[in-house]
Amino acid sequence: MRGALELSDVRRSFGDVLAVDGLSFSVPAGRLFGFVGRNGAGKTTTMRIICGLLAADAGSVSWDGGPVDARVRERIGYMPEERGLYSKMRIGDQLEYLAVRFRARARAARQENVSLATDLAAAVRQTGRQTPDLDALLSRR
Image (cartoon, rainbow, N blue to C red; front, top):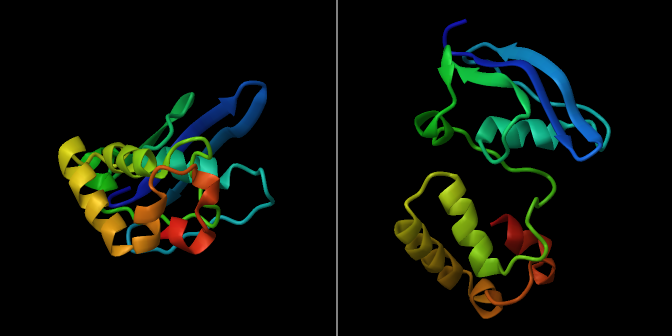
């Protein structure tokens, strides 16, 4: 299917917990698609796999018949309801980690995120604190 997102038999577990079990679907180009399900159904895990933030244990994700690479990921916008931050990681480290995961060059990512944090004065004062100290609104920015 041309211009489509396709997942084929995607599986992901965390220890003994099976989060995504053989998920397959495709979304044609130009279509809006959403996930509906209870907490723990695997929606966030699936989106993280699509975005390249997590690797699938099995199965595949493709766009337009090819891999979801950095070029494709640059075009994906993803804003989870849950913050999805690592609670034991310092905020400054979190900013750099996420920028690198989304394939920004480390030095450029660091500079861009420091600039963003400067604009968000509250974040600048908190960059050495643990992630749970960050309020919900600020962490989503």
